[in-house]
Length: 121
View 1 (cartoon, helix red, strand yellow):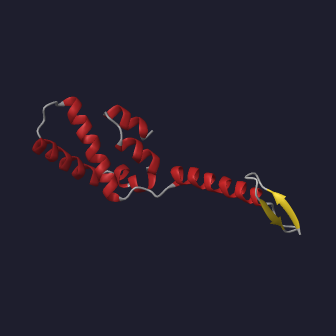
View 2 (cartoon, rainbow, N blue to C red; view 1 turned 90 degrees about the horizontal axis):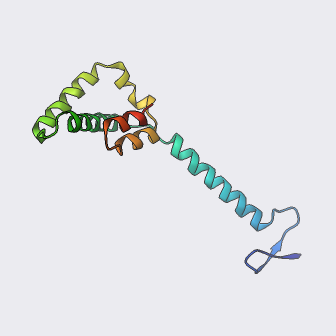
View 3 (tube, one colour; view 1 turned 120 degrees about the vertical axis):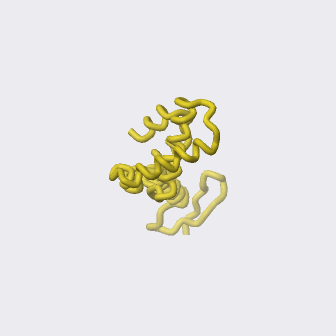
């Protein structure tokens, strides 16, 4: 049986016809990296609760810019009104199918309404 010195300096047995250990490691790392990239862009879609939270965040950002000083009770009332209107809007109803995980994460991290809207373009 042949012996091969790997990158770390140790020797390992090499079975004829089998890929070398370092080749297997490189392939495994490439597959893991590919899966990580795909998972970020193609992760699970938002749930209805996450879409509602996105709407609440959007309303909060709009209120903060258009009506500074609005108290928490008034903000909550406006969020509930927005949810009622959203229930009737087919576009909002498609949130769970149309918004990607990446877009949702971007929008939820937005610090103003303009940035949130850019995340969803």
